[in-house]
Image 1 (cartoon, one colour):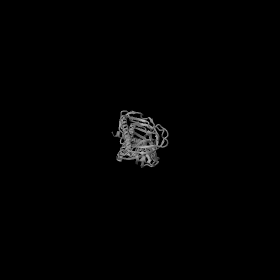
Image 2 (image 1 turned 90 degrees about the horizontal axis):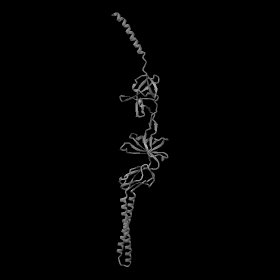
Image 3 (image 1 turned 90 degrees about the vertical axis):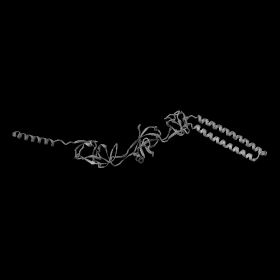
Image 4 (image 1 turned 135 degrees about the vertical axis):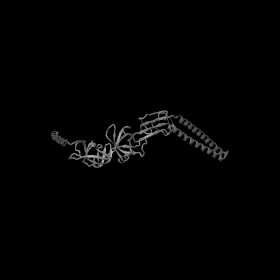
Length: 355
């Protein structure tokens, strides 16, 4: 038994020594990582807002009298001239009123003629001393009253003519009917909008601005405008920013006026208004470079000589879809790992892959 142990012990020792040598000779785990060199490349601004081409002057059109629509004379999208009829109400009631006012005027004029004739006769009788001056004065008052009634009847007739004319809705300028709701059979109230006229002339872009971008839009003022159909970018300037949010979208309507001659642009075209960008001097890294541990942010920096990584805490100034602006913790020129940051460990050696 002793002889067996004496033979086994050297063998076990030899095997253990061999295993230690194998472990010592095992190659170091070098992980390939993508990286970027940090630089002052962050930009402020550049937000884009989709919108559509609209006319600088848009008019909501409405009948000035109430009634029932009997004729729709144009459709949405049609070009019209100033004064062109767009829709008509049933004029029957207004025509009856007009006829009544004409009859009242005729009666007033007839009464005035009779009063004037009587005054002439009274004056002749006064000259013959058949009546007194008081009777003549009384007749003169009758003439004056008849003249007032004629004036009143003429004014009423003029108003009735206007009311009859208001039963026809006309365009107040050259342009395009961008909306038409005056369908036959619709009963409308006086002043109820039934059409929208986009007047000829300069064009604008109507956009919606979210609450968190109001200050940036106000400060910028200028925009770069691109059309969805393509073409050279246009210059735009903020003309109007609503003080109240749209109750449906909770965004603020804004209008961007286009520089130069924009009359050739078609209404309703899709366009994008982009705020100008400016360099902030801050560092910007992709979101994949951030390592979040217990609510704090870190990045892995890479030593250019040893190619070993070191975890550094950073302060993030802002985050958007394009990346994170780093306020502190990284210096320009630092090599920062941008992928696989959760798989790295302190001091680990890496192989650099370009971002």
